[in-house]
Image (cartoon, rainbow, N blue to C red):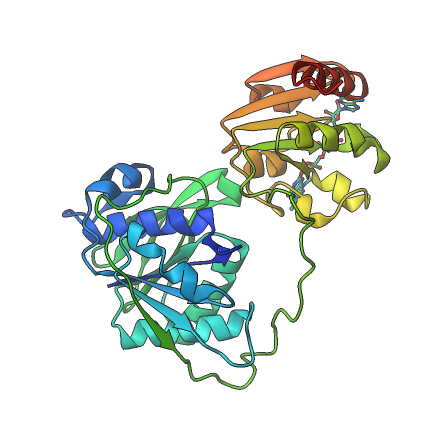
Length: 344
Ligand code: FAD
């Protein structure tokens, strides 16, 4: 049995968790027992939702989300109830995963390679003594299991062997496998689970949230991201980027220079120490393209770079480029879009 931690937001599983489910389904259902994440989508559609795939969910709204997972081949979903926690608490989540894995005699526990996925699985590893491998792109069961995983933000790949007893704890690198529903949906049996917590498991927990502005698009889900870097020049300089994002139904992302300067919040940072994004279009304005930034945006289907420097490293990644001052180029693009949609 493979157990997958499913994170959710706004009443839906997050995309990275659907990627992890696709990876796990292929892993559980493949005859050879070996699956490359890049091939998981193809294999996953052929794999049966054979009841070997289970999910675990936490927090408000988990039961409703659990009911949606049959489409991804999940036969059983455990909704964890912890009276003191209706949001995130990493050690308590790790404890629940560890206990569920032990009770279900899991072969593997899999989560998305998100900040939370990696953090919770690290706790589960410490609690069970099982080996944990973060940001995997491929897994080969055997004795021992071998995995290929991303290191240094994806700039190198490492092959690792997971020694020790079951379960194997893996997180799946974000955006390396497309989320795919199972060929045949299964019905999900949803059950409640109450872990036995230890002292200190609730020491760190989310106690409140600041809601996102109504109508705004989450960075991780956005189809278009308008990125701004040092070249934007100031907090006020983001106005045309915001306008372009609104016109295209997208959102704004930024480089670390921008968050360090206090021009924009860290929640908007793209990169190794920020969000990993996978939009259809990333418009990188005044961003040089440092490797730590590229790590976060390289899954974009297309990159349009707007930069005064034709030699900036971002050009090597860009599908399209405009060499020019973003303060001139962006207003011109916005004017043209508004003209075309007839709002001028
Ligand atoms: P710069 O590198 O200074 O580039 C500015 C660009 O703007 C230049 O290419 C310039 O030609 C262009 N420009 C200037 N004026 C204009 C104009 N008027 N019009 C058009 N173009 C203009 N960075 C991240 O972004 N995300 C991360 O998660 C991250 N994590 C890091 C983790 C570590 C451990 C370390 C060491 C660094 C990390 N960094 C991260 C920082 C990273 O190395 C770079 O310093 C940063 O990405 C550079 O930001 P930038 O492109 O905005 O600025």
